[in-house]
Image (tube, rainbow, N blue to C red; front, side, top):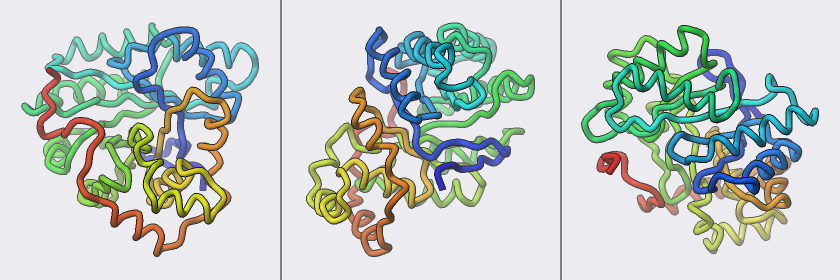
Length: 277
């Protein structure tokens, strides 16, 4: 299975192309076009990455060159909700569309909950954008169970996605179980821990066994946990490798061994402490 169906019926690729920490510029625009040429149909960016213009240029060039149609792509961005009021959230969406040069997004996320629950007005604005048919789906990122419980008490549109840090060192079992119960798809950001996971002895051992790269083992782990994953690379050969994770399967024992690496180690901020400063 190379796609998942979200709770509103929208189909999303299980493996997408991430651009976190890639600066604006021609290199990124070319990388996005190359990723699409390699077969990626899901592209993930965010307002705070400050690279939406280059991402959009790469997407539009790929469309203009006939590599793909806009309808075949699944494009995600996120609003940096540092205490944003409702009207400014609406404006932030329009700004992202303008920078990307697109008429709509397939998914728009609240990037972080924040420590003072300021996400409700932001999410209400996302609901308005969705209800107006300006975006195909909406969701959240970095939400823990208590954030989701609070959101669902007041929301009229259930998030389709919760994008979180997820990898063998941070398995997020409680969040994943809650999301599964509520029909919210989990998506992993920085699935390779910025490359740190590739040095793990167990992962290298499994890579040797299956004649795969360590990255492919980790991404296969995500896929078998039914987690959407968005690895980042600027190297065309690795783009191809990262997509090629559907021709083998890890055993239940191997999945359990990878789960056992969990020690709570993060490569990003803790949502319970992150306050946009």
